[in-house]
Image 1 (tube, helix red, strand yellow):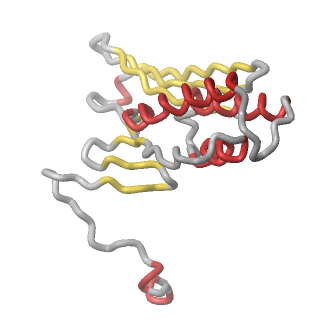
Image 2 (cartoon, rainbow, N blue to C red; image 1 turned 30 degrees about the horizontal axis):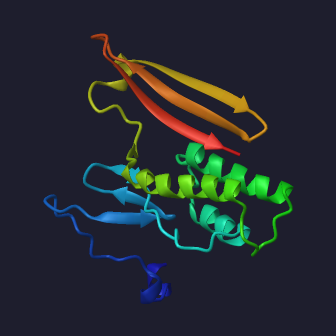
Amino acid sequence: MLKSVPSDKLSNQNLNLDLEDPPVERVLEILWFVGDDTLGFKIRHLDRPETKRGILSTVCSLFDPLGFAAPVALAARSLVQDLWKANVGWDEPLGEEFLSKWRTWKTQLPSLSQLRIPRSYILQDGDPQDCKLQLHVFLDASEAGYGASSYLRAEYPDGRVSLYLHHGEG
């Protein structure tokens, strides 16, 4: 079957497995840091105009199919909602209240690139059969939006506890 796919459509077959300088791969706009097997974000597209169009474009560029950036994105989506309610035009200058909120959010956004999420929920040490595993799920709804957080709690036979967190939003 692979022979029927044009070579320029195939993934890179030359994998970098150098443990001294592990690669960073991109999957659905999410970064995969191969060395420590974590996921993260690359923040870009922050130089758009300070208009409803520019803000919406920037917010939509934060592609997060797994919902890890949901708490961050919710504040910007709420701002977009406020712009709609205030009947702000697509390209008209924003009022100071909106500009202040937008600039604060935009200056804090690059810190999201420091976030690292373990890719796997596989327990790092110990046999999962020897652990007590619990899945906890919380749902929340407000005027700003709704969301869910879930985490896996693993309790080892020696009493140690590990938590593996996941967020989502709508």
